[in-house]
Amino acid sequence: MKQIKIGLIGWGTVGAGVTRILRKNSALISRRLGARLRLARVADLNLRKDRGVKLAPGILTRDASRIVNDPEIDIVVELIGGLDPAGELVLAALRGGKRVVTANKALLAERGKHLFAEAARVRRRIFFEASVGGGIPIIKIIREGLAANRIKSILGIINGTTNYVLSRMSEEGITLAAAVRGAQLEGYAEKDPALDLEGVDSVHKLALLSSLAFGGWVDCSRIYREGIREITAEDIAFTERLGYRVKLLAIAKQTRDGADLRVHPTLVSRRHLLASVNGIYNAVYLEGDFSERQIFEGQGAGLGPTASAVVADLIEAGREILSGNESIPPFLAGNGDLRLAPTGDVACRHYLRIPALDRPGVLARIASILAEGGISIDSVIQRQKRKRGLVPVILMTHIAPEKDLRRAMDRISRLDVVRDRPVRIRVED
Image (cartoon, rainbow, N blue to C red; front, side, top):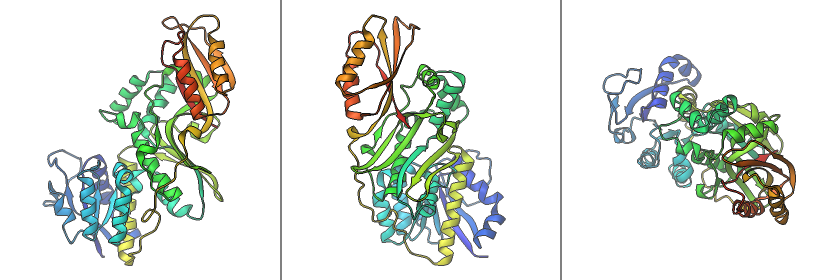
C-alpha cells in the first residue's frame, strides 16, 4: 500500500491528539483512503514533555526546517499557532511542493490573502477545517455542501471558552471571574484568556467564514468587536426573565450596502436554536438562498474534535495526492477585498441596563434622551433592589440604528444621576 508521509510541526495538545488518531485508527484510515498516512517526522521545542503517546526513535526533532525542507514529506501539518514563525514555515512548505494542513485561524485571518495566493501560484492547497468550529466540518459545508447557494447570513457561537463561561453564569448565577476560573480548571480556558473573552478568536474565525461565504477577504481590524468582560450575573438574570439568553455571537450578513460583520454579546430568544447551545459546544446557523436555514453543532474546544478535523484534512489531502489533482479550488485563491457595510447603519433592538440614583424623574430624563435620538422604548423594568445607592433601570428598545444608539448612550452616561457605566446588549431576533 502506498505511503503518504506527514510532517507535524507543533506537538502540543492537538498534535498529540493527531498522533493518537493516526495510530488508533490507522487501519480504518488506510481502508478509506487507499493509502497509509505515515507520521514521518515531528518537530517541537519541548522534547521532554510527556504527551501520553510514544514516537519511534528518530522521528522527534526541535528543528522544523527538517520537515519543510525534506523532499520526502508530502503533507506538512502546522499546529504551533501565531503568526511567526508559522507563516514562514507554511510558505516554505508550499514552495517546497507540499500540501499544508493547519488549525491556525489567526495566521489565515491575518495573512490568508497572501498565503492562498502563493498556494495557487505553486499549485498546492492549504487545508484548514480545524481552524473554525472544532469538530464541526463547517468549512467543507460552505465550500462544498452549500456551493450552489448564495449565503445570506451566518450566526455563529464559535468560541467554546466564552460559551462555557456564559453557560456557567446562566446555570449557576456566578460571576464572570468565577466562571473563567472554572473554565481554566477544566482546561477550557488559557491562563490568559484575553483572546477568547475579548472576542479576538471569534473575529479571526468570522473573517475566514465570511471570506468563504461571501467571496472576499476582510481586514480583521474592520470587523466590529466587543467581548464579554462587561457582562454581569445581574445582566444574565435580567435578560433571562425577559426570555433571552446571552451568547457571544459572530454575525455575518449580506446587505445592500455590503457585508455586515460583527462579534459581540447578543441576546437570542430562548426559542432560537442557538439558545440551547451550551458549555464548550459551538454552533453555526446558516441561511442560503435555496438551502434556507440550517444549524450545525459540535464541540468547539478540546483535543478530540480539533485533532479529528486535522486528520480529516490529512485524508482529503491524501486523496488529492493519490488522484494527481493539482487544481486549486477558487473559493479563496484570487479573492478580492470584501466590501463592508458601515457599522453605524446597522439596526437592531437593544437591552440597556443603566445604574442610576433612586430619584424622581430619572426614568423620564433617560426616556427623553432616547426619544430625542429617535429611539423608542419597547419595555421598561425599574428594579427596586438598591446596590450602593443605585437602582438599575432596565430598558428594551425597538429597532434603532447603531449610530443613534451610541449618541444617546453617550449622553445618558454623562447624566449626573448615572454613576456607573451603562451596559447595552444587542438583540438578534
